[in-house]
Amino acid sequence: MPAHRRWTPSGPYDLARSLSVLRRGPGDPSFQVTADGAVWRASRTPQGAGTLRLVDRGEAVEAQAWGPGADWLLEHLPALLGAEDDPSAFTPRHRLVHQAHRRHPGLRLIRTGLVLESLIPSILEQKVTSDEAYRAWRLLLWRHGEPAPGPAERMRVMPDPRAWALIPSWEWHRAGVDAKRSSTILRAVRAARRLEEAAAMDLPAASARLRAIPGIGPWTAAETLQRSNGTPDAITVGDLHLPRIIGYALTGEHGTDDAAMLELLAPYAGQRHRAARLILLSGRVPPRRAPRFSVRDFRAI
Image (cartoon, rainbow, N blue to C red; front, top):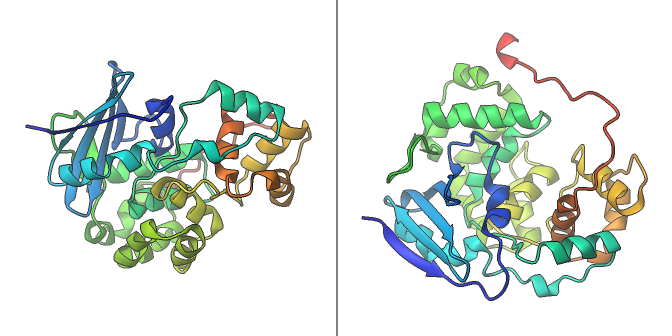
């Protein structure tokens, strides 16, 4: 029998929108949204594998959990759903941001409390297309993860640190992961305990802890801490698309770089990640001027 918990938000709440950042592509084996609107997550907690089913009942979110990690998942449920987030600290400074903020009052910055769970897929996303990274995550979980506890169909829990460390080189190659990214993941899982401690740190300390691992830079650290720590100021730098989108959305200009993006977001100091989320939700993006990057097949190398 599953364990249960019910959480009541203090104001408007959008379950699917808030948790969507945890989904790594439409075929993510650890994240599903079923036809009835339920959100399913399969996680590896400090107590073991666990599966969480979440349903928004309007006035409250109802949760069911299975597996050795069920108690941990339910204990941390409010943080996961955004209870520790404070949207009232945000003040829109641009018309477009104000409109997005008004249209999405239920957006919350979630906090998983699990670092490796967001760090490893973020490493897989380094310097490749989203499709390549999502494919690698999907294949690695299917081949080296474990079935999710409970009744979830076709869901997988990511490997534990030892299982990640035992993946042979040809399996990384088969998943399309080059040696640089796989080596970074291996260094990270060897330091798993110390990296997980970053979930309880403030942004500068947590970022420094992650970036102490060779191969983890500002981009990867920010992408991880946005999810594991729910940090509202963890703005992503070094991204190919984000500066251009933010620059175009706020000024109509093309070719914005990181420095110009940070200058545009300066009025949101302390809330730059939230501002970026709202800008992305506005849907205002620069017109595409070049074909999409083709997906490289590292297996042919």
